[in-house]
Length: 318
Image 1 (cartoon, helix red, strand yellow):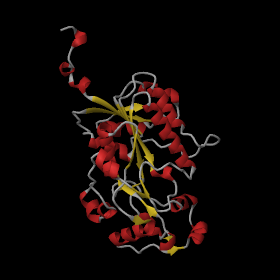
Image 2: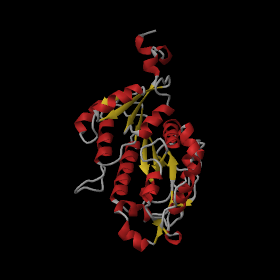
Image 3: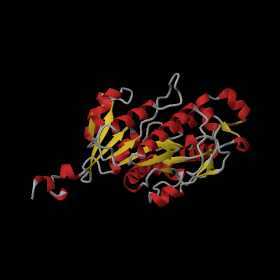
Image 4: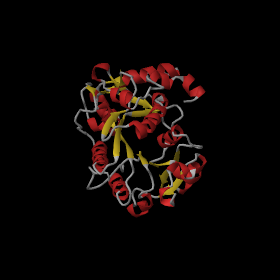
């Protein structure tokens, strides 16, 4: 048989494996790599973009090939062109951007470089549920129109649009809208520190609904979307918890044996709390995760924050 007709099964394993690129390989990216079989995956070859030389050793130890580059330096990204069959994009937009504040230049740069050669088959983008804005506590499905209330949420909308535009070129794009991420083994991943500080929450009648997902379940959703996500589809990735913010902190206080946080009015909160925290207190919504369960076929390991925050979970690992 001529060499150009060699069946795929006859090729060495390193050429048969799907190549998966993780852009923004922090805590969730590393967990996703674990879900894909790292460090000894026989199914995929894992690569990750990193701008930090200090992170190269960690990535290699996790069975991930590091590719040095910076989303803020478009020229450094050219090596990513045509390199992967599947891409997971978890990198956030810049936290501050003067002038053109409503756009995400990092996602735009990634999209441009992916078009330079053979496009990936699949791209999974990790967005935020902040794109919905304030929904007055209503149940929110993916069909709800976006209405971002903050610059950071607007940049996420821009990134979603850029990725979905890439999907028009034949890439199967999944947009995962992600709420608050927590895990006992994640830096700043539990409300313990905030409880120890005694940071107040709103009085019940003025409180807002909040949404969560355990970092491990999020990683499982990212991995599932690589293989099961439908084309150009948005998916809410959240657990089954139905709690207002103050009740969430009360629950955590009980689990940790700490005092419940004080309750204050919204008027007092406007002068006592930092703007970033207030922005979360100005948005109330209850996310519908039906699509996640049905289309990604994800069975939550931590369906309620009680399961994920439990001291027993921290003791035995996630």
